[in-house]
Length: 118
Image (cartoon, rainbow, N blue to C red):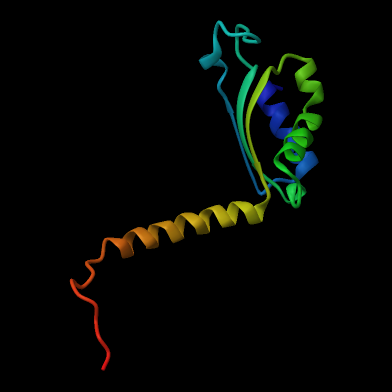
């Protein structure tokens, strides 16, 4: 089993994610500390799980790092981690949609003078 498969299996078993994206970026770190031939050392992970509800960013990261203790002991060197609860992910999408609407409204031409109501 590759390091990426192990990461996916452990995070899935421990955190029951609604979204899990694990990308091996080891090739981008060749020559850097912790890099090794063949990769499997540096990953970008996006994880959305109810296990993160009411947890701070630090608590979410500690939880992920705790789940992957064995992988760090066996060569995993670094994670670029985005760990969120489902509601915070929904809020982010809603915020993006609201910003798009506000931008569309701001592009709408406003009258040159105020409208008076008599």
